Amino acid sequence: DIVMTQSPDSLAVSLGERATINCKSSQSLLYSSNNKNYLAWYQQKPGQPPKLLIYWASTRESGVPDRFSGSGSGTDFTLTISSLQAEDVAVYFCQHYYGSPPYTFGQGTKLEMK
Amino acid sequence: QVQLQESGPGLVKPSETLSLTCEVSGYSISSGYYWGWIRQPPGKGLEWIGSIYHSGSTYYNPSLKSRVTISVDTSKNQFSLNLSSVTAADTAVYYCAKPTLSVAYNWYFALWGRGTLVTVSS
Image (cartoon, rainbow over all chains, first blue to last red; front, side, top):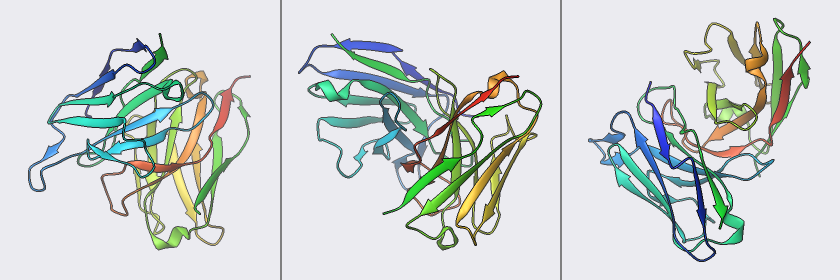
């Protein structure tokens, strides 16, 4: 199985500042035939299911604010929140969907307001 | 719009079978997609359990495969999860989810149920 490792486990950022969360996979998520990275990012607030933010490593889901962006390729990926808002306090997960199942998630990164 | 709703007992005894159902509204299961179950122990991360197509084709997480059965009832537009021989480690919020892509593989999930907490305890 592909192992997904996020860093840091927790992060405190001031309002309006940039937040950066990293996700590393144990094997490449880049499929050469279509040049796509099979990586998604989710946001989860307490008592709620995860919400899809980003797929194909960098494509924002409809309705997701443009302060959220995804980048990276191969085995190293980043979720960036350009200007942290109060409503962005949450736990963030990455998930790979490369090849056949099982599709695994990172352990999560807890984002708090400083 | 498409909605998913999990239902089932909130308390299961150790060694017994956990049984949950996901009712789908606003979309016919028979129209496609591999419908999935994902769980999250309290305060922990997410684990994909398995997924099922309306034909009954299934994929299971190898870590749970010996204990998991996922079935579908197209007449009721719902799919179900059975997890046998449960222990306290199976205590979790269980979510049903619909992937964005209607393909056999490569699922990421844009639509989730609200989740249901199942506690394994005597």
